[in-house]
Length: 144
Image (tube, rainbow, N blue to C red; front, side, top):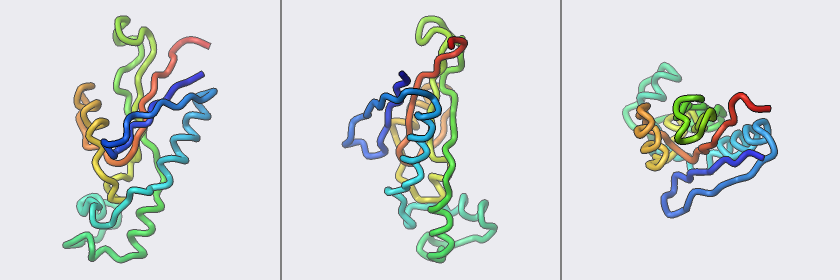
């Protein structure tokens, strides 16, 4: 049994643990949840990220053509960030690791900031602005 905890970007919703049978099932659940992009908003999209991705500069988010934004919103890609590498300390999780899964296209989609996840990355010494819902989980290392 593997437990992944959903960290919603909406701070009014508490973190929600989810039990899954395997890492593969966890990854499928993460992909399904993040792929929905239900909090995406054209008004919040990161214009610098849009320019880097499309090669076209836009002065305002509202000037991004609807077809371009639809293609950006349809992007699907969960990224993994190791917050605590395996065997880093025996005091916290032993030989296991702690991983954050987030939408790597959150800025392009205009997902809202996830302050809880961003604080976790900062506490782990890897600060970044995480957008949208994400998951944090403990991965068993070196055990069958």
